[in-house]
Length: 290
Image (cartoon, rainbow, N blue to C red):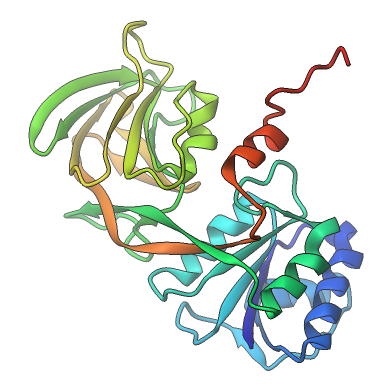
């Protein structure tokens, strides 16, 4: 099996887990490729030189699967590398919460054994695609979690005129506006009181960030809608972020967001389900008095 490994470069305290992963894969005689930044971290920061077939230096690679070792941020960066190559991704969590990277380090060996026994399932997740007539996120115009339009620094609020399928919806006066996928509904969207959407749902949510009017609420819409936005800012600039990758844009610019024409495949253990994740990660049903 040809496997690519991606990881973060700030987990020097996770050396034991990192080496355990490579040892387990070597025992299964997997052919390994490592993303260039992670390989530099392994060799320069923790002096670890794993036996690999090569280094991943571009977003074109032919692999059977990819492993993301880190938190959800690492998983999002890995998904951006994978793009539309139809390569399934396994997330091993060495971070904190871990909705995407949901295989705990303690369960890593068992999960890998199941994968090599072909005992796993795949979940497909939709992405958002950003389209603009100017140079904006041209290298990777996709988001697995959310697109965020945000004011810069301490500037006054921005105004986001929003159209659904070219029909005017409203002008959001707020610190920002999120457009989140079901996957991203438990990320930034959750922190601004947006709804949780089940992963298989073919819907996306528009959630304002600190809106000026208290009667403005998140709106769930079909995922195949085209969303067009024109943003005005007194500071003359604002931020457009795709899964945390931000670029500065000038006031008055217009751009569109729609569902991408491909999906990301996530590797899941057979006994995993989203409801169990909610109970574990968000502690639903737990009682601190017990």
